[in-house]
Image (spheres, rainbow, N blue to C red):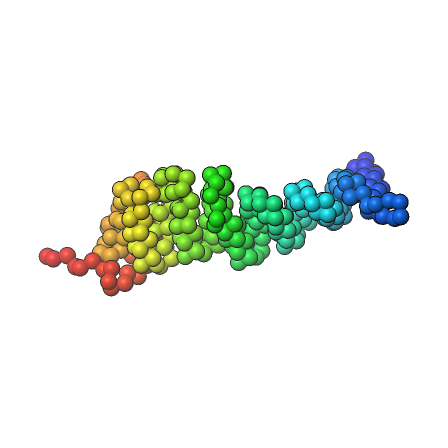
Length: 301
């Protein structure tokens, strides 16, 4: 509408004035040092006004300049927040997914610089989800990077954030069809759940890993993973999930189609993610070749 257009023009003029204020703050001379606080504030004000005026490229540029000023002030958290605001505009308003992901990555690096692992990982997860549809391999790599940030985490709060990050990564890798990597990541996630004493999540994740290995055609990895999990005292051995994992493996080893059908109809599957349950129900004896060493001897008549 005409009224809306006028408002946008007025806001754009105000934004240009804010940019001019920021430039003045950044100038230094014999009697005046740079006013970085004033510059950061003016650039952020300009970004907000450009956003209201729907001048999104200018808003993104102003957010980035505000972030640069905050970095110069050694305020990494504030700079990261501004870069994430720019990323949202790039993603939602300009549909510039690659640019948005790059901004989220820069924000993650800033968070990491001040040891804010949870925010650094969250920014990488946002970057990954932004480009999932346009650059799936890079999205998967970003998610795996986010998980790796917690490799040395010890505090309970860090471990909880780690569990959330692993969950997001598992979901994305599964959507991308990267089943082998998904199963391996689930087993890394189990170690986090074990340290948090979340035994139900340990059991659910181990069963999920077995199902995903089988769906990927990896019987041996499924069997070895299940055996190792049962040997650890972290909550898998003796559970309904462990029993179901063993029944699935036994059905494949015996080439028992009826046994497999009964296993994938078991109510215990309700414990796993719906995507994993669907994979289980789609399993057939042809899904995974069983190495000769694992085949059960034929039943005597």
